[in-house]
Length: 172
Image (cartoon, rainbow, N blue to C red):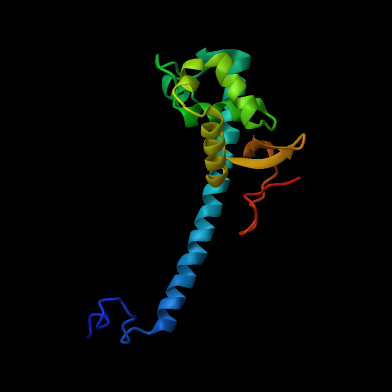
């Protein structure tokens, strides 16, 4: 049975492949994946810092200093519709400049964008899911603030990627 199937139909390793070679390819791919994920986290942090700089300048000098394209890139262009939920969470966290917990973000939504929040059955769970995703993307970091889990935009932090196996950078 050269096709790699046992008599019972289950797959088995095909002997003609050098397992050591396969393991080396996997090891190299793993190393490259870790490096690419670190680069992505660094790039996302840099993007956040540049967006904050541009937004800060627009706050000081007015949106007229921004082109249409730039306003769209820094999420300042009013398209007539509410921004996406993830985009809104990202914007809130980025503009806060400090750690916020899920309740803080839900309260902000309730005050400024209630229609966007109303679309979610469990807003706290939705916000928490999005914030955890932003941690995975390298855009935010989970922290403990006033004894509760909170998140802050990575542009507010020193450049440091949590070690593999750590709890997404959760710090006390």
